[in-house]
Image (cartoon, rainbow, N blue to C red; front, side, top):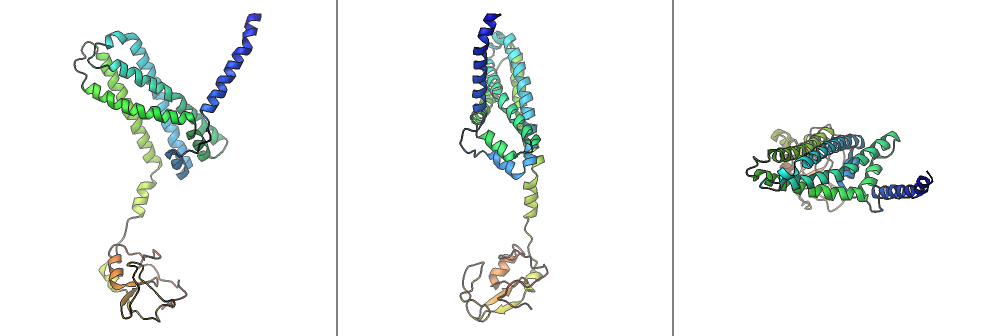
Length: 293
């Protein structure tokens, strides 16, 4: 009993040292994070939290399950797996180790996200702090290595040759590659579902052109020095100054452009190049230097 008590302080010190080292590893080390994940969170914190939760849970759980299956298989069939023409057993072992290294990072990030939501804190600050940690940078490097390792695994599986003496190693290698592809698919589908704004923006930015009748119905005015209150007036499309006697289009919004410039522009978009007002919108008085009709 006394001997056990005598060892307790040293064990406690070791445990506290490990806790401090772990806290530093998973905390920002002072460098500002420029990770793209921070930009995703900045766009929509709630959607980003759901996205990260789905990806981290799926990746973490599948990583643990697949790693356990691979370790069990390799421990039972390590010798017979060496009969394959390609070193699939070594590929499987390295891939399993890479998955095990990333599991803690995924679950710690998941815990940080849940804590930030419970405390109603800033999700952007939470993710920015975590992505500035040594743990996240190490995980990204491991992920990059894993992707390259999977490409090598695909090549070895395709060129595995005769694996009749060890069919298990071939099947489990194919299974591991498929689940890696499934993780990528889940991440992409989750992102597309939770961040549909890109598609909406494409629809919103769809350009509407003016019809020939709308263009010809816009009145023409002859440029003169009295037409504008300030000297040196120019066309915002071609950036050239007007010459006396040139024909100008006066859009319903009150802005003027060269006739050819305006016609060419309106064939591509029916909105004014300056105020973005459509030519079929109700006109209003909007410039003190010009009189409304």
